[in-house]
Length: 312
Image (cartoon, rainbow, N blue to C red; front, side, top):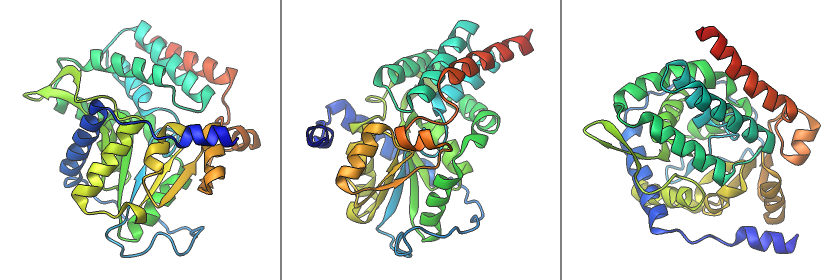
């Protein structure tokens, strides 16, 4: 266990592309946050730690991972399903998205290879489309596939920071446009996400840097904290994935939320706070979402077939 902890705590050095991706995400987040509409505050829940978050501490903020932390499943896969419904691509790509989503649910954790496949698929699909068009469609897709997948427990944690007068940011490998829509719908401050290159408002099919994943997330948080004059030792971060240990290690208040097995072990070793909002005893023990397994694979394929039938 000690060897595993040392391996996980070793910070992967950020590449030049990671730094570029992080800085681009921070710049995009600061621009879009000015346009975020605030939602009425939800009903306050009983905080687990009454002394945190500290009310009125404007140099503190909270950073939330998206996939399986705030929302069940992967935003990029839900987005792909919505694009298929609008004839952006063909049935074979839909089955690919369905399989990736089923794998994501079965594993209960991010896989770099699957995330890269999803990224490449998404970039090829949006190439040549206008950013404004995808933003408009993204609003519809959120209502159709994402709104009902928000974890209430994690949403309450975010609201506690907002109620304390702190800024709350999503930090995700999902496209910054999709992340910004989700942040606005949840009443959050803004979002750090993967920045796709566009020229004159049209996607080129290339990224600025690399996907906001792993070390790139930490670089984005670091860049945003510097720009916003935040004290990271007073900030909080929340994630389900061991891939986000670099980001969680930056802040003074790291939380493992719905953690995968590697993050759970690391969090216990480091004394980090744990939160698990999934149902089912097995999910809480091994980090696999309830209703996963063979049923998840069948469910993904069934959803794909159902959509196809409705289109006939």
